[in-house]
Amino acid sequence: MSFDTEIWKQGSVMIYVAIDERLYAEKYSAAMDAAAAIQNMLLMAHYLELGGCWMYLSELTNQNKLQKKLGLKNYFYVYSVILLGYPAEFPKEPCRKPLEKIVRFIDFDLNGL
View 1 (tube, rainbow, N blue to C red):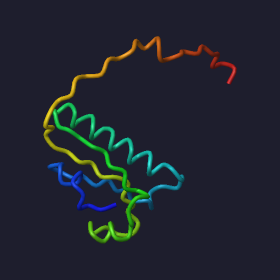
View 2: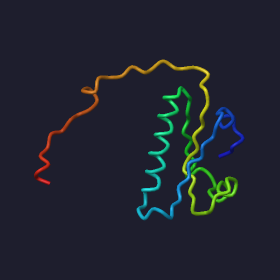
View 3: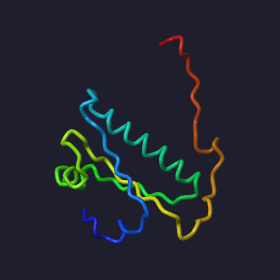
View 4: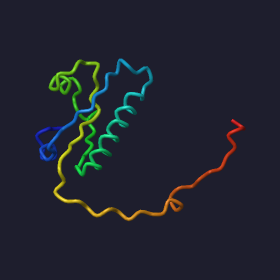
């Protein structure tokens, strides 16, 4: 992936999300923590009326090269970058279906577990 493409130049701010993988024993825990942090940043950006774009980097870039460029030790794994800026336009909110039409609630007995 090239950082010289136009999409990278459109955001006012680039936030790289990296996790110190030494802190995680479980295979996917670091990735889940990174995703949760990114989601919260994007929700706050939306609240502040900023546009945000989550760009996946994990397997699309050379981690060693990216770590060197950002001045990170090799135990930091860069998962994604978030592009933030003021949007050129605010699109119309999509039409939403009623919850009852898209979710099925299943009743089960927790005492049997």
